[in-house]
Length: 282
Image (cartoon, rainbow, N blue to C red):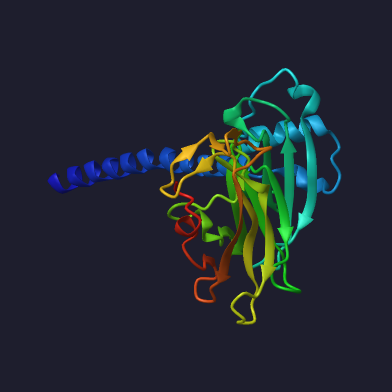
């Protein structure tokens, strides 16, 4: 009798445990299915056609959680400026690249546009918010790298350069490490660049048979600077007061930030310390 009672109790306990686990497993399965659903942009099935631009943009915003800063001109300006199939260095796969420009907003939301990289079946690879983009061939005859120019509304910024690594994008330009080297400067504090976005130069600088990159231009000092690094707006020369500005700069200094391609890390590394060389920390 005791044995029978024990078996009955054990049976109810086992059934109870099974009933507790079933809903939990079902919830996990539903959550996973929902997650897969919301991260696929199904309109790529119609590529290269956009049947309804408004719905296309609305789906982009909702599926990928794109925050859009409201403005009075938003409804008039918002548009898809790029929708194309691309290849990226590091992979032979095709990808879909979209740029969505909503045109205006607060300074914190600058540059008021998104670039979205997707697989050809609509799965998200990466979302950017760059001032501009470019697909740049660095190694002759190979797929291009994706270059993104990032920056603030004030005019401070730089570059990112991406390749595919397995199934993810990897920034292979190391100018953003440590004391990040600014390669875009339109902020009129004490200096700017000429041009504001330094020009990209592709060349084999170390003669190893592989191209390297450099950012080339001029530092334009729009304030005077002493040997000790102190800044001043004007000075007296030959009895006359000279005031420095963008239109009357104190000095222009040619710059070339060279980044050598490393076969070991497959990154572009700074040839030397440009922060110190050009006193960019002053």
